[in-house]
Image (cartoon, rainbow, N blue to C red):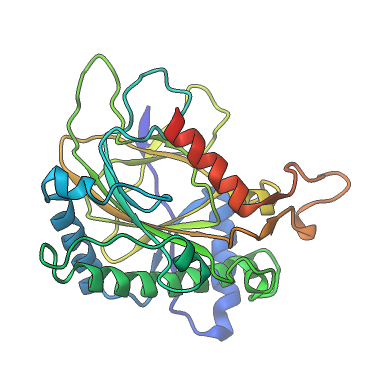
Amino acid sequence: METSLVLPIIDISSPDKISSSTAKLIRKACLEHGFFYVKNHGISEELMEEVLRESKSFFNLPLDEKMSLLRRDLLGYTPLHAEKLDPSLTSSTGDSKESFYFGSLEGALAQRYPNQWPPEDLLPSWRQAMECYYKNVLSVGRKLLGLIALALDLDEGFFEQIGALNDPTAVVRLLRYPGEVISWDVETYGASAHSDYGMVTLLLTDGVPGLQVCRDKSRQPRVWEDVPGIRGAFIVNIGDMMERWTNGLFRSTLHRVMPVGKERYSVVFFLDPNPDCHVECLESCCSETSPPRFPPILAGDYIKERFRLTYES
């Protein structure tokens, strides 16, 4: 069952003196949906359109060119059906999408996990566009986490202070969904049902529908609601580690992408903590009557295990 979902639209251009009111809006969105739109974030529509255009140019390359950049240490190209985001599915076919990951441009993580880039003779302006977008969206993500900290009645710099944003695991993922329904007998997924692993995700889409969310993970049968894109705005959602930090107060909402008979492109930015950051229940989110639901964990260990389940299922 699918219906349309109306999500809150949050303007983050507000000056500092009224950021507390913006934080209250974010708190309400995280309590009720785990998803919301962000507008007036400071990234131009021209840059967003350029990144989508360059992404399409990459996926239009011959398969052998893309396979030469096959994913290594989680960065690079992932071909069609290589992932299954919902390990519980019995079908042996993976999700109907192909993707390309790139991450940190500087710092220890960039040296440990170097990016792979398409050759300049094939895509001359590709790397420049992607690096520009990465720097800008990372800045938006940091600002957003400051507002989320305020929404949790914490200091705006809380996630900086605990080391989560000290060389964070910040990754851009370019995605292409072919869009065809392979069989009417077996349900086809562009991205099967999952929650995101980390702190917060910022999604840019090309306007083609397909994204759906399920606000109640425990309800059966699941109720799926369509989330349309808004030109120039990000679709933002809370990830599993933020849910762990908040003891389930802020929701990491189940979502999926369904084929709609049309090719779909999107650009996802995952802002996750430094791998050595300890993720444990915030004092303000637990009590004698509401003890911590999740044990403490290292961010890097959690991410690695989630990726293992995704690629080995």
